[in-house]
Length: 203
Image 1 (cartoon, rainbow, N blue to C red):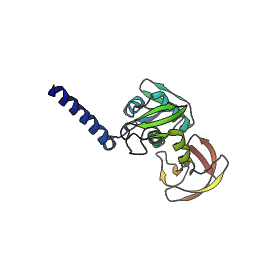
Image 2 (tube, one colour):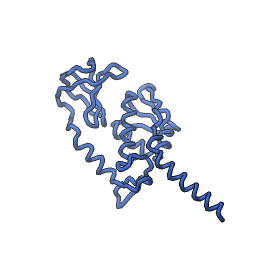
Image 3 (spheres, one colour):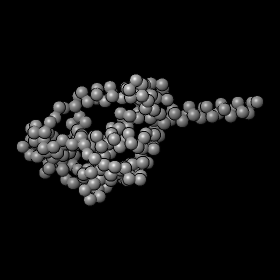
């Protein structure tokens, strides 16, 4: 009788150790992103969805909403209408993980999404914590600047995209400015807002 009991005990301890170490071992697979014609492809979309243990449809819906575009899943890859910088796709995937995967109590990814009276709840199997997903996202957006098309503002360029455009991060938004360099302050007019992406022209 001792052997089966010891085996069960070892298995139980093994499971506990796996959960406690998961925060250190959790690294989202790097996105294999490239442009194909007038579309942008996330080649290893299914691999990312499986790694973070979320339904591909749920992840894809979030990505499309944040990017403000249409798209589809083709086999293991996701195809988005429009040309997006790899850094933009990567940032949106990271935002999904922060909102829908990582536990806000213990910082671990051992979580599940469950519906409780039509409210989406993130439950953590590691610490038992739980939170409404919508409430957390709304709170995070409270500090974001209120931006709309036609607005004119001064921005400080933070970095350069692979295409040579200046990049500015404002709350949940990523803004692109042509002919600008890091550290430069420029006056721009918001030409178009597509999801969390802002396209500008010089004011």
